[in-house]
Amino acid sequence: MTALVLALVLPWAVGALLLLADGRRRRWGWTAVAAVAANLAALVVLAVKVLPDGHETVVTGGWEGGIGIVVRADALGVTFALLSSFVVLAALVHEVLDGVRSRTFPALVVLLCTGLTGLFLTGDVFNFYVFFELAMISAYVLTAYGDDRHQLGAALIFAVVNLVGSFLFLIAVAAMYHVTGTLSMEQVAERMAGVEPNAAILIAVTFFVAFGTKLGLFPFHFWLPAVYAGTRPAVAAILSGALANIGAYGLLRFGAGLLPEELELGSTVLIVIGSASVIYGALLAVSRRDPAEMLAYSSIGQAGYVLVALGLGGPVGLAAAVLYAILNALSKALLFLSGALRGALVAGAFAVGALSLAGMPPAAGFLGKLALFHTGVEEGSVALIVLLFCGGALAFVYAFQLYQHEFWRGSRVKAGTGLEEAAAASAKELAAGRELPIAGGAAGSDVAAEPAASPVAVRAVSVVLALIVLALGLWPEPLLSLSSDAAAVLHGGAR
Amino acid sequence: MTLVFALAAATIFGFGAYLVLTNDLVRVVAGMVLISQSAVLVVIASGLTRGAAPILPTGDERPSDALVQAMALTAIVIGLAVTALLLAIVARVRATLHSLEVRELARDEAEHTAEIEQSQEPQLEELDRDEAEDEQ
Image (cartoon, rainbow over all chains, first blue to last red; front, side, top):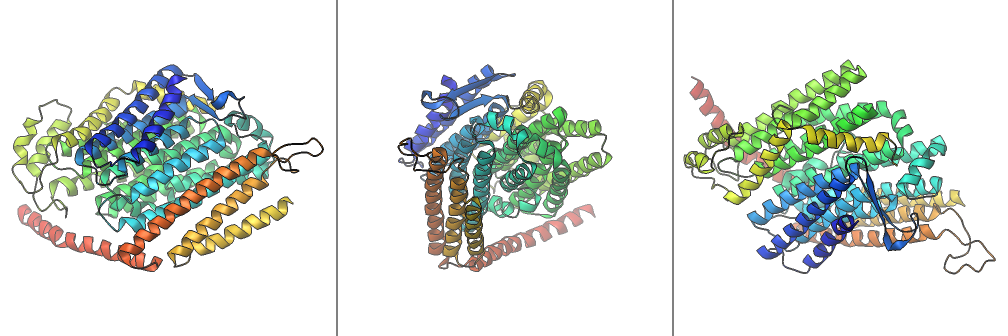
């Protein structure tokens, strides 16, 4: 209980206080890092308690459940909270080491982390909306962060489109309350079966549109590329690695947890929309040259995979959806963080991310693709396996097209014109997993001195993230059991 | 009564959606305000009972559902914060672009994208040439 309360209250208080301080100063940046790290530590303690199949509930103010606000940690929620908190921590450390450029940045990131933690750990449908807005409002401000004035336009579009999504979500919550007479997720799951089908389907569709907008699925994706293209790498990593989890978690929790019958009814629609996302995102990613835009389109495609797995359903499909969401968040965060850096080892870290995105062993992304293939074989669906194969092949093309543009041709405008083949090649050897001292790659980096190498500490964050992605790929057991535990919460009914 | 609420919410949502699609940024924000109000209206309408104000039930009459009132209040507060944020972004846009039109915003972004692509093209062509020479 202490861990649960601490995970929520501590970052919230620190975030609110940090708003008063000047975040550009190093010490406030590190305070924010400490708050997010404490949040992560509390979540780890909570995860140890809750996993594999327990749960922990706190009702605020000592009220009975149903009147007081219920905070409830189960395997699914804790998994997503851990993942998001970890990605936010990596991005925040990256930015603090690189130099924060605005007063409010650390405070907003901490508040965003609070919002995400609350959202994943709440047991109350309306509170989900409140935490959701807390995270989203921080994100709206964060997208405008940076030196580029063109970001303002993107931030405005992002805010308007996602706010419409939020209000649709609120309308769906109100409708759900009206038909079930309760806001608690447990009771809603019990009573939803008795609700008149017309109303239930309308509610399910509204939820789907709301979360589809967050996740950037194919017909609702239009806002996404413009937002990712101009943001700072750390913000892009947070958006795609932490905030996009809301969409995946929402679809899992509300779709598979609260509205399972409606999910089954709409499974064909989900699979079709998911497939369209996969193909559309991958094709557009291949055709783009701007790295951020390429990754943005790739996000649309990756969201499609989660939807396809959800549409197939069943224990295998749900576990695959959870696993895929986790791995995609990690590899996207790694790609965004390492893509903008220069110097030894960075290209290696990026290559690990690219391999993971394309689903190649030994990087962890392979597991996600494997789980999806497993689902496809289980369902006996040839079309799905063909789709997965095509999507994977296209992902491979764009991921390494990107690698080539970024690290072999030296064609980036911001980085000048230096060719860094030697640095990239020496770092790539390191990517094979051999542990060499950083100085080993440094010999290569003075071949072309123009794009100044990023500070060692900043690069270290990306390298650590890359090693984690590799380690998860080489020793997948914990991750696999985590995702199947999380999925068990859903198909065992949201108890 | 529910029908009246539904019609009112739908009408307000419709007007809001229309305003969001207009060219003027301030109207876009006004449209968002309307959409948020229609959501609040739906929340109020979703109450399970209707009756006297739920502040102090006297026993003669059934009080109306208090929970939706609390939810609506929260939604209104969030809506207010969001409106303030949107207006702040619009003010920043006006300060940098000296315009309040969505078209201007789009034009500016298109120009920016074109600039980036132009600055990349020569280098890429040069690199392509180099590569072709290397292959020979």
